[in-house]
Image (tube, rainbow, N blue to C red; front, side, top):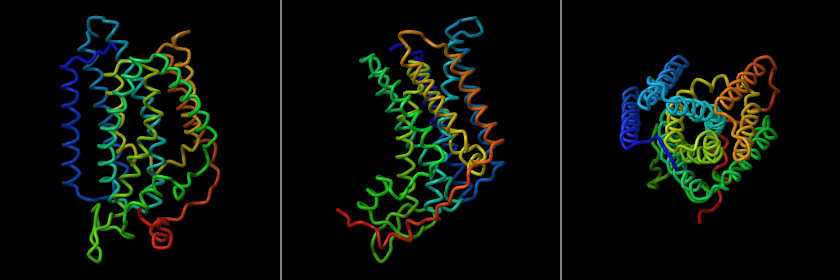
Length: 336
């Protein structure tokens, strides 16, 4: 499979990501546990978006964009389209993160740490899944049709499920965690494990990190095939994915307070998934230009966000805060 990723580009990209994570981690440690404000989240979101576009500008220049190389223009457009699609699909991640945090009543001051570790795990898992996906496509061309059909199915399923609150209590992952781990009913600061009556217990914060990681794996199954419909270049697929994830934490804190305002956005995401899946199914019949994909995605997302502001959401009953702790002693299943 052809790729623009030279050894130099891969080295610079990996070095940048590692430096960004180290800086972010030490900044978080220096600030300590605190509630992230809307202003802070907005500033960091803008920083990550700016860094992403600086990267694609550098890639465009490296590939000969100033000299009129059409490959540079094509790869830059693929990156921007893939980045936008991944950012858009990440909105659904954010709403599920909010559901998990609400269910476990995670204090606002601890949420930043949870997302930091969750994003680090997501970067590793997505890199592995993208490399596996690239290998499968290179070996078996027909798997593109499988990806396309899966995206169409996922889009339809997302459309039908929109407006229905997920039942976290019935989540299989949470049930499995309960069976195999002893969990404290209370938090112990930002610790993942605590000692109570001489017994080492996992804190609810550790359970939340596990669920966040599982959520990201589930959503990656949708988003990774979606970006392969835009470009087959593993370097563009991985870099656009990683840059979208790096800004996920800041985007969460920016959107968490206003998620109800964009209640129709999931319908837009469903339409985008069906479109991208159809594009993949038609790959050998008619190749839809990347610029069309970018334009279609932008129009659909902007339109659904606009309609969300104009059409009031339906009122639904709120889930009680942290029912897990209250039910632990009476409902926890025996450990194997």
